[in-house]
Length: 346
Image (tube, helix red, strand yellow):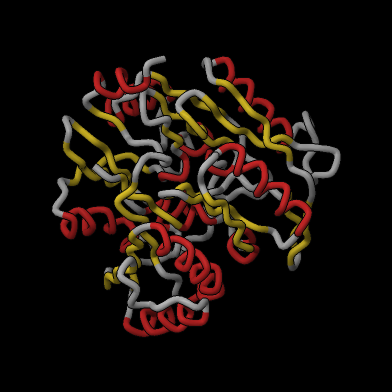
């Protein structure tokens, strides 16, 4: 496939995550999410070495705490690559409420998909109105046009190859608490129209305990335009191949993606860890790719963390790979990719 020719022929596309980026964005944790701050400070330390990092904070108190956490991580919070913005927000999961950036006829635009806090999966008490407005406010700040999409969906359930394809989990998009009455046929048409893709690949199934209803960035990730890495359960993981639960979800996703014409690499889950009252599989696919680096979730297990680092280095040769322990985030349902939102460069 001539990727450059396809990109040139496509007037509308979402750039792939491994393409050059203008910046990464974060919403700094506040209130009940303050426990994430040490991991956010570590991410800040890494990202700011390579590119611009925009940090949204909700209040001056949050700003003060953020600066203290970043200083404790050995970084100057006034580093030239760190830009602060006081913009109201509700949560620290900017992948999901934040913008989708799309290039249309040579110009960058923002898409603001509806956000309702994951279909209310974490409880009706979780606020989201401010999060839902963030993409439009960023459009004003960046002087980019904003297209409001009247469909509830999160960026964490969208994997783009930057050319002609998107992979997502229908269990998320078709969730009746997000989009009641919405059909696969409607979704196929809408996604092709909004993203300019010709291939829409929908997997299905919800890993145990996943309150997002199976965001794709937890178990299937593009690493180039034609290759997808999909989680694989092993004898050492909590899940097992073909177990009718997580193992079957991953195996089915791999088969669906391969049937769509993509090369599939299975990433083995080589262990499990206990944290507080939960046991987690050491699944490392919730990574962020940036300009010259990759950050992946760490589980505090030197053996599996080291093995994962080596595998990810093979997926992204030439990029520095970092493992950041994020068990507090994982306990609450996500990792580094869920917390970050990357802005492509023009």
